[in-house]
Length: 226
Ligand code: ACO
Ligand code: ZN
Image (cartoon, rainbow, N blue to C red; front, top):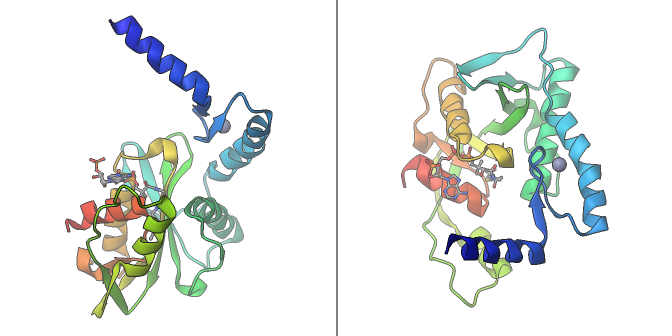
């Protein structure tokens, strides 16, 4: 019985031909020369970008058994701001953000999660804000709705029109695909709440996510307990 099942699964994969690279996480079709080429192009560049050699001065905010969170500020040395920017670009590409600039670059704080293999596996950009619009609960995607329709509605109709007081805006949150569901995003947000304003702890209501993706919404809903 088990062999039959296995056979079916294998046949399905062969037809689809998709592989996830165990180092860079890229999903590509190994049968396609074009895909292979794209993967080769991406692979090393990605790994170089997330590689973290260690700095003379690191602003370590929290340490864990499997990594640490460091904070990079706009006035930090070039090597630090460049790394933060390079990782943010990776996140932006994955999020489909077109514009690379931040809304208030001089006030942006970038939190990086460095794992014990010296890789930047998480990136969070936080900015001070004064108000936000609460994300409203969405109806489920209906059967005949395309993904594009769904995304469109998500982005257009997800927010209330009543502004609420907020202090910290999360403009980007990204975790390396192979490192997800290990609480990295949760730990980055907890760290932001404890360190964003000197001497005070922000409540979950005082932080706001800007324009969340479907992944981001699932995470935010869970995190905020809404
Ligand atoms: N589907 C369903 N539930 C989820 C998902 C998901 N994709 N991701 C997180 N959750 C929920 C789960 O309940 C999870 O707890 P569990 O693993 O015990 O079930 C809980 O949130 C906590 O998840 P974490 O492990 O802390 O989150 P993770 O480190 O995996 O990072 C993130 C989540 C940042 C959304 C990641 O999936 C990611 O980088 N996605 C691609 C980029 C993206 O979409 N970012 C959000 C954009 S919105 C913005 O930037 C403002
Ligand atoms: Zn790869």
